[in-house]
Image (tube, rainbow, N blue to C red):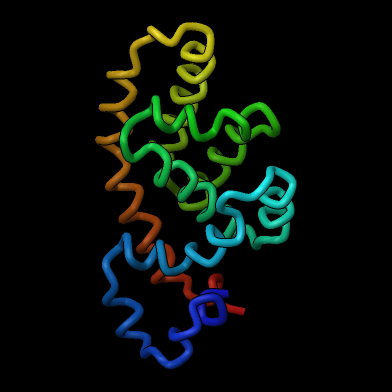
Length: 158
């Protein structure tokens, strides 16, 4: 999928792909999928998600977290509430980070899940510690995932 979804990658040399920054590489891999789901109804998002390979499902779930938690957990919770009510996104997040071997973020997902339900009942519930915990790990997660992609390009190609 990587080469076909990104188009120009067909003509790129392997060293060019590997020279992208970690966030550029991840974004280039997932952007076409995000574009298929952005501003779409839950059913469309679920259909796209179900048709992805395990590698792309994991990358997609990473991007859902990474893209929506950029400004903190409050913003993340606001963006994912409809997903959390429609499916077990918490298992999908844990599976994604486990897929990439990111045990630390997989554990943090448990804390995020607990905080989500507490915050949903009481919007005065403090998310400060969780924001710090997330921010301490996310850059490590980005590096781990980008390294995984670079070392497993065949999983992101047809």
